[in-house]
Image (cartoon, rainbow, N blue to C red; front, side, top):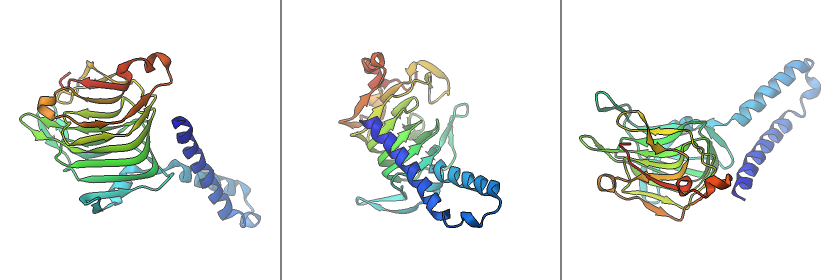
Length: 260
């Protein structure tokens, strides 16, 4: 049923977009003498209408604001049925050799999904190495994952936030991955379907892939509770269409060592 609903949203969105384009030009066709030019223009317009907006553009254009008595630097409200493409990085990166953080500062971010589709196209929606929070809810995520990445050693940067009421369909690597963080994070009532194993994940402080960090898990958290705290995990669902994979606990939940 979950897969059917996701597919229906995508198909209905495309049909609606096509109908709007047809309706907008239906009265002008008789005046066009060059049908080849008309058809080319129509195809380009159709592709643009169906290709979706950039998630990064939606983030960059969002203003600050309040939601549920909390103030956010970016209050991103998405449109129902619209597809937003590409990944989004909130916060800094780690230089593995110099062991310093670099890049833009993090921002407290609220993403109100309203049933939008996030096609991450193999990328991540990631809040990384900052003391800010990401709260996201009520959307469909495909072809990517949501990741919270923190550190607690000589450097301390621990993001917080929540992932609530999100449907993941064929996410890459994980649905949700908490890496080097945990306390202050709520994972509640999400559904993950057909997570994709992409090979080994990378150790966050070296950038080296490790066989001790398998992917292909719907929800994955850090086993280092003493360093990063324990997340609140409430009533999440996971399912895989491959019967053998569906019988494996590792397909659904895992606790991973962040040091490989």
